[in-house]
Length: 216
Ligand SMILES: Nc1ncnc2c1ncn2[C@@H]1O[C@H](COP(=O)(O)OP(=O)(O)OP(=O)(O)O)[C@@H](O)[C@H]1O
Image 1: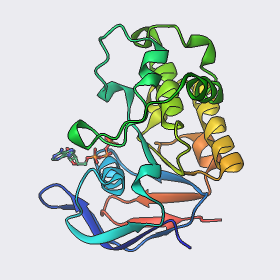
Image 2: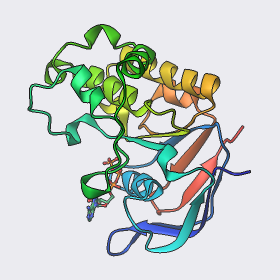
Image 3: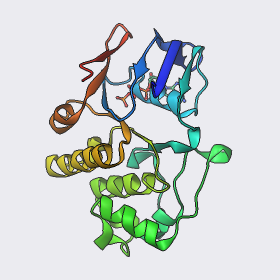
Image 4: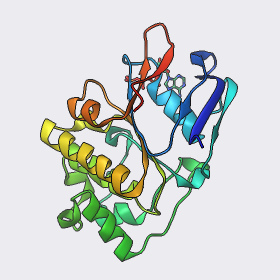
């Protein structure tokens, strides 16, 4: 059974940015999303998350929406509050924003386990705002792991990472795929580790067509 299928899906804001597309995604794959800046990669993933209505056509997940997790870019967060890493983890996972947000109330043991998975456990009493952007990104990934999701959708996590941390982030994601069968959608631009680790590439071309390539 397919994890996600799209039928004549067109995505955008007031007019179509991408599509129509007919795509089938299998469960348990690491899907790299690549394409030029501003073409609509985030728009497509926001649509898959249910944060944006399709312009036309439709898509269907074979898992409940509650099993999807979105990992935003750290630069989209406003974290001036003196929150520690533990505090940020304690806000639980977020499926959306505003009234659409779905929050969990994770317990201490779950938070510790999630932070260990992203190798950020030793920073749990540090102030979130004082971490490097790459470390913040790992914490947000850890938060997304709470509640045993089946799908992780990451909006260009490697943008703020040095090559070493990027390699670590990809290794963590590969572990999540291999050990728990989680499906990963990751926007990354020219990331060698992500290219090497991925099973498929969802490639968006300048002519706004979308192709699923190299699916093993
Ligand atoms: N909320 C919004 N309302 C209207 N237009 C938007 C909105 N958010 C983004 N856009 C526009 O939609 C287009 C696609 O943006 P999107 O962020 O999806 O591209 P992207 O491929 O993810 O870009 P990048 O690689 O630069 O992150 C851009 O022209 C952007 O300005």
